[in-house]
Figure 1: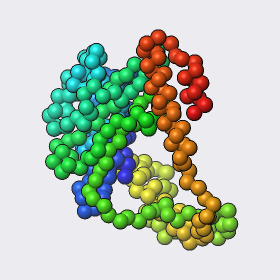
Figure 2 (figure 1 turned 180 degrees about the vertical axis):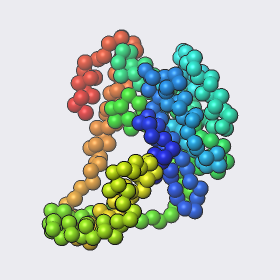
Figure 3 (figure 1 turned 90 degrees about the horizontal axis):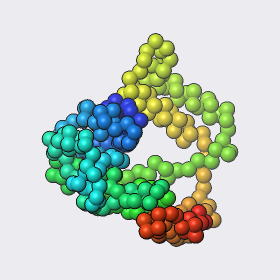
Figure 4 (figure 1 turned 90 degrees about the vertical axis):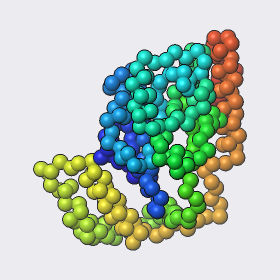
Length: 279
């Protein structure tokens, strides 16, 4: 669940992962935009978020910070880093990145490598061993200059309802029947949606999230009542195929060859660039 009551900025997003009966986990994703570093940057504003101290918290994203604690050899320390690392240390955060392992490949110039994408976990995450298999996977970056970083939140296997298992055939829907059913569903939720009709009331982010949830429930219930379920076809094919996996592997290899060529010769190799585009 998106916690817009905690952070409203576009470069800071807080997700509340709830899997009962396990403790909730806050995942804070940030983008510390380079031109706006300093006290206006997300890494500094992160310190002002009201995060519960007894919750499991994961901080992850593009930090755009260089430091010899994690950077590759030759990278200079950012001068504003000490205050940020002091805050992380005071709140018992541990870095999951391995020192010197790159997470970013420069798209221009010489294609240099750096470690800008960081993942920190607080003491509760470490204590409960909640994050598994953290790793950097350049082969899955799909053309991005930032490498893919993956990990697992593993409390064990439990069977869950797949909300996307039912697919509806809107092509054959009776539009008037759907409209009448939707009006009925909204009427049943009139009190919960009343704040939408109050022009004088300015809703808080939390209230807006609640209204959005109620409105979504009305849409879902209406669709389940009036729209026929689409029957699976024997001719249907998965959207990801072996050919796409092979193309992705070729792109990853070509990008690495391009980076090595730029580092050695200072210019891109046109043959490799053409191969990347064709892949």
